[in-house]
Amino acid sequence: METGKVTRAFFEERIATRLGANRADVSLGPKHGVDFGVVSVGDRAVVTATDPVSVLPGLGFERAGAFAIGIVLADVAVSGLAPTHLTVSLSLPPSMSDDEFDRFWGAIDAECEDLGVSVVTGHTARYAECSFPWVGAATGIAVGDPEAIVRPDGARPGDDVLVTKGPAVEAVGLLTTLFPDAVGLSGAALETAQARLDDVGAVRDALVAAASGEVTAMHDATEGGLFGAFAETADSAGVGLSIERDAVPLLDGVESACETLGMDPWRATTSGTLVIAVDPADTDAVIGALRERGTVVERVGRVEAGTGVAVDGERLGPSEGDSSWEVYERLRDATGRDERSSG
Image 1: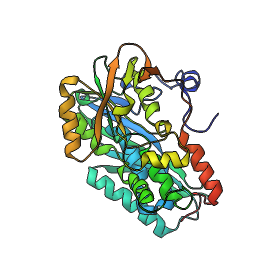
Image 2: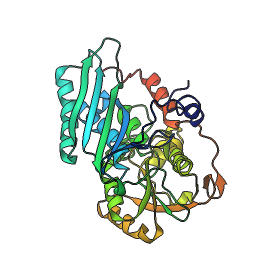
Image 3: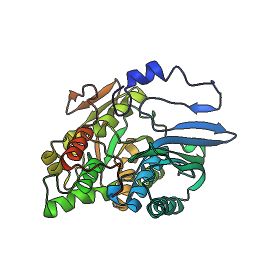
């Protein structure tokens, strides 16, 4: 198995046909490229999503905690329902001190309190063979009206496609913050690139978008980047996307950082960037609501009948993986800095 998320073929062959009992209360089960599942409980819907917990000490433990939990909760928020509950399982390295844990967990607590999310259960331990950054997993939960759910596979021909923030925001922010002396940038250019880490986070954007118009699908462009998110949005709904490259927003510092790093911005992980399908009658309302809260967003294309993704009329080929992983490994090897050790 290659590193990173499994391919659609792997999922369909080895996972999708073996999902335990077939229960009638599962209204949306696992699908490749889909962020969450849904269980019906009486007249309520329980939306649930599970993600790894990644702790990057180089960010500082407060920032690492907020960063980690934001990714988990975003996969619930793209349902259009506000996250309500959280479970966390942490398998921590013995090198993590009590003070470092307090800073990390304090940030998670603060973000959950601000969003109205309650931690309901979990597991916390230190184990000898565990190391940063991958130290466990968490499950975000939202409980709400099933009619209010934005299905991840709901994009329809004729819908507009919106993109917030643009490509490579997360990758640029992370790499320039973790390896400032090795990325080939300095001064204002480095500071601008590092500031992109502050743009990571999609929970509030997703909820504002869903409340502002008839949003038919939302997807957080994480591993595989924006091109991967386009493909997953199209594949899950059985539709095609027609995208105009020049219409996609590009935040300050992203292009220069990607050129310097030799990283394809379109295939670099970018948590916090949303791909949104919306009824054209509500496009202006959704764009206006997002811009009012300071989020950069543009209409970048349309949903069409058919399959796959075309960018400026040219069909995207198969996924080539995430372009940021190789860059991360190169910078790590060049600096000798390993995120497994606390910073």
